[in-house]
Image (cartoon, rainbow, N blue to C red; front, top):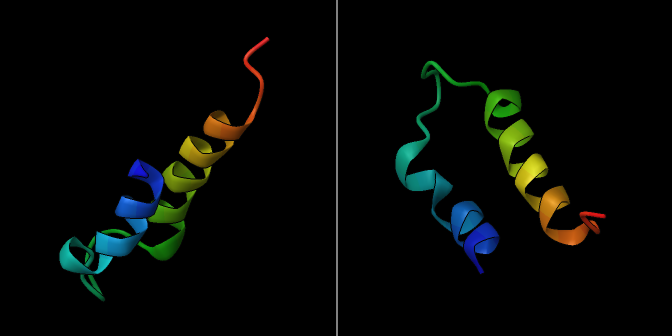
Length: 41
């Protein structure tokens, strides 16, 4: 649910032309997702 919430509300804090690129935002989102679906062992 947290992962979906991040995506659903990104438009509230991400500004076009701001200091973060789409890639800057996508990388941590992808890492959080991958850690959530992978087996830690």
